[in-house]
Amino acid sequence: MTAVLVTPGRFVRWVENFETRHGDTSFGVSDGALDGRASDGSTFLARPPFDTAYAGAADASAFADSITTPECWGVLLVRKGGFAVARLTGEEIVEHKVGQRHVQGRTKAGGQSQQRFARRRGNQARQAYEAAAEHAARILALDTLDRRSGMLLVTGGDRAAVDEVLADPRLAGLTRVGPWLAVPDPRRAVLDAAIADACAVRVDVVNADR
Image (cartoon, rainbow, N blue to C red; front, side):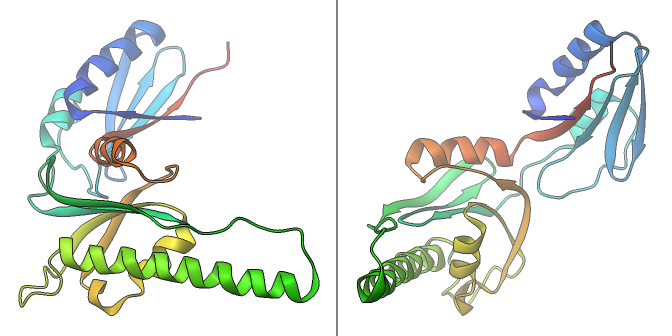
C-alpha cells in the first residue's frame, strides 16, 4: 500500500489519472471515506483531512467539493531543539512562531560525566518544550477568556516532544486531529509544507499485482 497526499483542488484530476492507469473504476463510500476499485483490481481509499468523515455521494467531484478547511485551527510541530506553531484562518496564517533551542547530542562518555551530560541535555530539552508551550499558548489565544475550547490542532515532529508541550495546562482546550505530520527540524519552509499536508486528502493506494 502506498499513501499519497492530494490537495482537494487536484483530487478529481488524480482520480482521472488513476482510471487512465488502471481502467474503469467504480466508487463507493465506506467508513467515512471515498473508495475506488479499478477493473485491474487496483484500489484506493481517500480520507478527508482533520479527521472528518465523508458521507456524501460516491463521486470524486462531490467528495472534493465537500472538503473544507476549519475557520480557526492550529499547527504545532516540535522536535528536540526546535518548534513551530501557527494559528490559521482557512489556509491563511494569522500568526506564527518558529524557534530553535540548542539541545546537545548524545555522548559516548561514561560514569559521572555521562550522568551530568544526561541531566544537562534533559534540562535543555525541557527549556525548549517550555518555550514552545509559551508561544503556543500565546499564538493560539488560549490565555484569554475565550479559550477556544475544541479548537482543532494538527501536530507533528517527535511524538514524545509534542506530548511534553501539550501537557501544559494552558493548552488543555485543544482538540488534536490528524494527520500526524512526520517532519524534520521545524523551519518556516517546513511549517508551510506541514500546513499544506494538513489540508490535503490522504489517499491509500493498493496497486494490483501485474
